[in-house]
Image 1: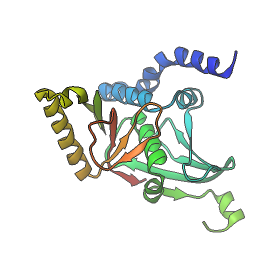
Image 2: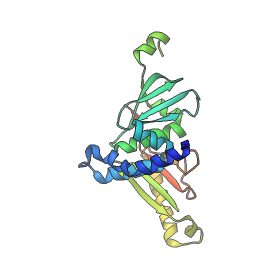
Image 3: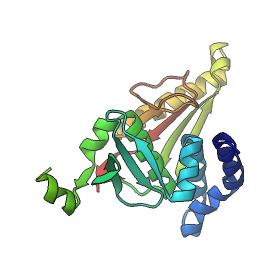
Length: 139
Length: 81
């Protein structure tokens, strides 16, 4: 079975599970909002990102400006990891002014990183892990 | 068909229009486009950012409403956490 077939099979198997993944956490709170957010997420992510999100709980978004950098965006609300050459170099924290469903947070990170990375980095608060600071000095 | 999706606490709110009908002068289609344009401007004024999201194409930031885009997603104002 080649990679394309495997991805195809995974999508067919996992597609019906997506609404459950995003609704199950707090179904009783704004279920319609969470359902619509899950639909938007499915429309915006690539097939590969979608499979990665289901299986690994995050998506890796390549930096448009630096081929050695990726942004690791978690499925649940939390900090985004910046990884360079596979190593964690920073955590980023960015959120909408008003509450939005969890799935919409993933969409927001993806769109901003892919289409407006500079603004994304300007607006996000960054935290450098202690180990990185010790080896590299102040960032 | 075009669609404007606005991310909010209610999930995404959607507004659709038919670009081909509008080009043919259909009154309802033209009204739908005008409404989408109005909402686009209102959300931009509130600090939202608009993105062109179309299958098979890179995501692009959109500064002005474009009725020819098949899907526009508006992200609300964000702040560092």
